[in-house]
Image (cartoon, rainbow, N blue to C red; front, side, top):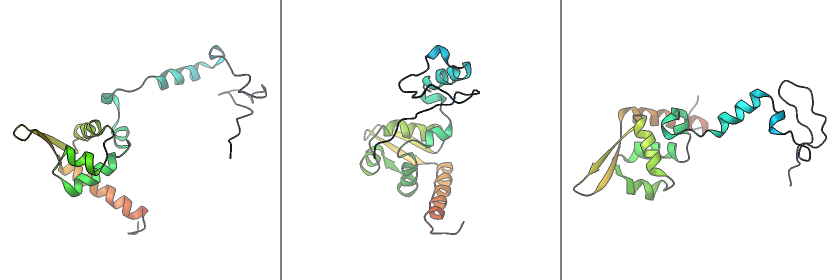
Length: 142
């Protein structure tokens, strides 16, 4: 089923737009209210890894699965994580968990391996996440 395009729009703080089809007759950037321009400017600025909040770090793809995996399997090598969880930017996700104090990463020069170990804080967070999943999946009562 093909989605229909919007036929009208309502500008912030104004009345219903009477342009007919907004796709054929869009507002120019200069016509936008200042609050919309400010919103768009903020939206375009992407946050660096250091500026993200804890929630933004945790909501990344595979991050919660990684935390649950580490709770069960820790200590593991990064190679284990790549093989068992995912490969997609996993080094960055492990670094996010390290910054949050949920894991520690040790480089073993002797074997040239990175070993990831869950911290007590990480274990507590993973246990709470497991409880949430049990409630959502109906395994326990809320």
